[in-house]
Length: 167
Image 1 (cartoon, rainbow, N blue to C red):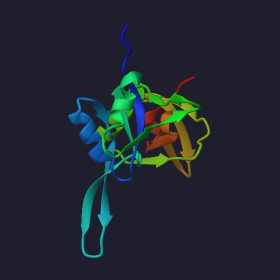
Image 2: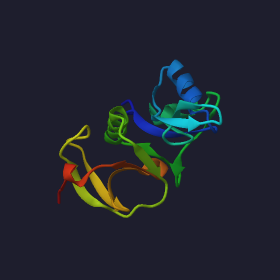
Image 3: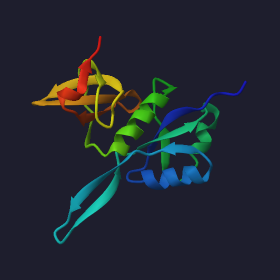
């Protein structure tokens, strides 16, 4: 019986996420490296740059018995694990991150522990149909996507009118 592929969380050398992802793809692996565009200001110019949404992390879809093989590419450091168990991310979370990034909505990443929020369904806009949690921070409502595999949370600012509380 062959083992099913899962999304494992790889930790890379600093600022090596793109190169590691490219090398893994060249080796025939399925890789997801969430990227965001931001404007950087230098003294003489502004420039749009792509950066990894999660510094030092990317997701590799593979089987447990092929993890070591994946680490052989230059810049790969290790797979994240907790108490000896490799961290994985569910397909639904990967799809949701992809969808959020495709919409171009602005996102924040939070590494601190966030209290559980209200269960909500998104009623309108580009993320319509997704369910998850909503928290309030300041005067703003945020739809949050927890990525327990790397102890990070993506926060998307959404107006309350697009959210329906579900139980």
